Image (cartoon, rainbow, N blue to C red; front, side, top):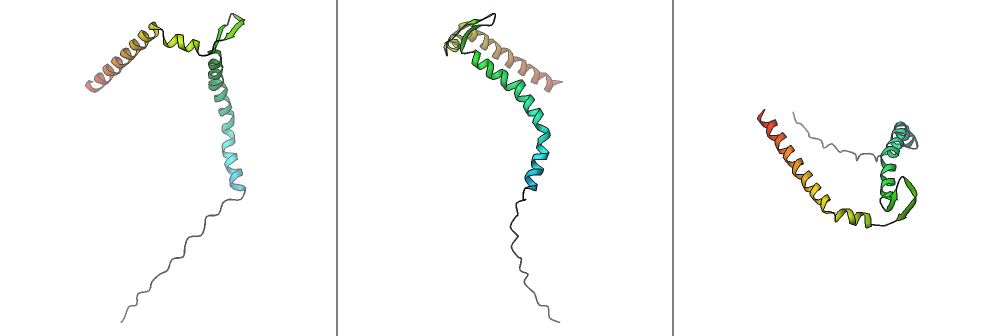
Length: 110
């Protein structure tokens, strides 16, 4: 009895077909319920951020809003050259680092 080996030939895979409009509609339908949450998220987080950024370029007292004038980056220059701010930042970094180190040590010990 003789066994003959046959070579199987594999056909190349068929090219992937893009869904015709049905795929896009389905994708839109699954994402549409997220739009109210996205709009709310932008309204609650990004609009106040942009408003704060715009206000930071003005010399503006909110009790007397008619007396505002554009100062540009001078507000930022005065903040970053302030010695009290530097001391506060150094104190905050030291306090944060010490609390993290103590927490990690206590977590490893107990």
